Image (cartoon, rainbow, N blue to C red; front, top):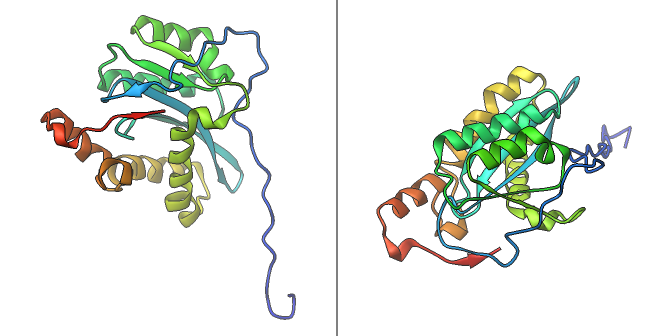
Length: 209
């Protein structure tokens, strides 16, 4: 390998973003087998990391399960609760929250008193996945996989500024407005939501989580 100039690929250390070792209240899973028929019925939220040269940057995102649209996000240098709260505030200011369920893991960012208060103040019901079961929050995991394969790994970010510049562009201009989803009839999330606003019943679907 040395003579041919071939370098082995080193497996990078996995970084956990969920700290479930706390004494905060844990809420029941409200979305298991739930039938979802429209937007703003269930949001799911999660946090992932993005590797840069001198460390990590963290992304908190909230996705509408029905349309797959990212409705709120925040980027930060630490896994503070403020990161998740900023993403939630963004979603709340742009969407309706009547009869809405917010689903997340049991991480300390989502169980802290400030986050829970913000949900309750806006009449949002709280749902949490079972401990150590990523399938309960598969929609967020699917988005993060897409983000990294189609954006992060291609650009190989080096600085925090690189992340700040590229991630909002990918979420808003590429993922929400251009990326096609087979589950949406091969339409991007924003176009699909516009069809819903027009009340075109032929474009609607019903599925269970």
